[in-house]
Length: 69
Image (cartoon, rainbow, N blue to C red):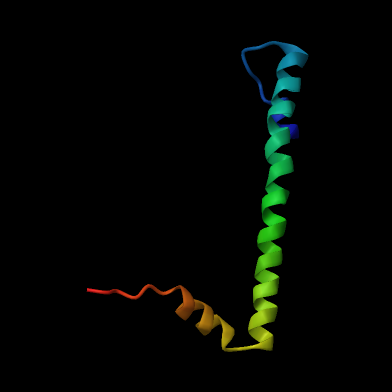
């Protein structure tokens, strides 16, 4: 966010810097909201695989499509 605020642009002064900072706020907030559930899913999947080693193979087999002619 600091880099965005200090970039030189065509608009003068403070308004440009404030606009650059405000543009960076949504990705800064949304990225952790996406990363945390993904990391939690990976941890849970790893724990599940440690407790029952055959579950990964079972999950892969469950979602395979059977080709019917």
